[in-house]
Length: 389
Image (cartoon, rainbow, N blue to C red; front, side, top):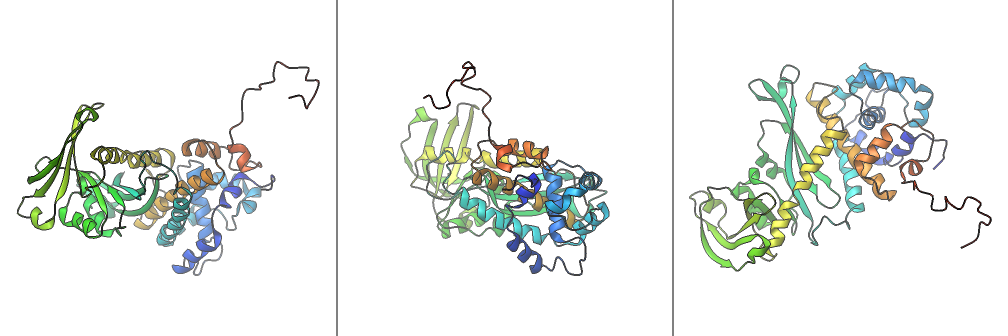
């Protein structure tokens, strides 16, 4: 890379421009737009995420202060908070949703050989959602409770690389289990979910599609035991049973056997009961698989702590979804940069470094690479020869 180019421009080099333009044309995002294109909008919102800006005014002030460098950073339109606000309000959020999926596909390819702690050939997903609280007065379209609004980000995450691969943004009142209706079930894959997703009528299609799920059983589960397997109780396992549901409705919704595994976690002193439709994996592997679900909780925590999605630059449904999808795009973009540049730092560390160096004129890899702080030859101050071994 040219050392004279600024960091922000080098980051944007990782964005595939032609696919982005295809997404824009698909929804006519630049129709009758003269000065501030969808790519300008994306750059402004990406800058806000990378630089931790809190408002449209912050974006405007900071970018105008760097006006001589904006052209080389890729900006072509005039930066004004009213222009950004109008774009967030009117440009279809689907543009950035589709583009995020393109970045996600690239990231999943880069991370497909990574390990998530368990040696399993099957693709393994975790399902969960996070709720973002909103002000009812400003966001009446997302009313969650009597005096509260909220949006939910329902996420399916590939555990290899912690890459979110399927996202739905809904109002806070939409129950988590409805997310299962939107999934395209992948045969042979594992889906790990908590008790909020237990709906046996929705879980049965996983079995019909030859996919596997792992979830926790509810305490009032009505079942009858068919058989059991011996377990090593020193590992924390307490039982491994094959069961049939006995409830009037559940037995019709899920008419085939299930596997029920009881496990005692010594660290938390809790007894956990898992349900799965997989009968081949070792019971202890099933328990460990469920523990890997915690990665999606860490993803949500990272997203809220390091990207700007808890407060929004616009109040409409379109503006909120646009901001969330661009935040997801930035997360995936940082993951792509980490893998392609073979960086050792965490995503949070990379983001912190970039936030203070976006308009520095230095090579991106140079500023992100780890520099050794200790000189091994510091005592050899005379250093008579360059080539002594």
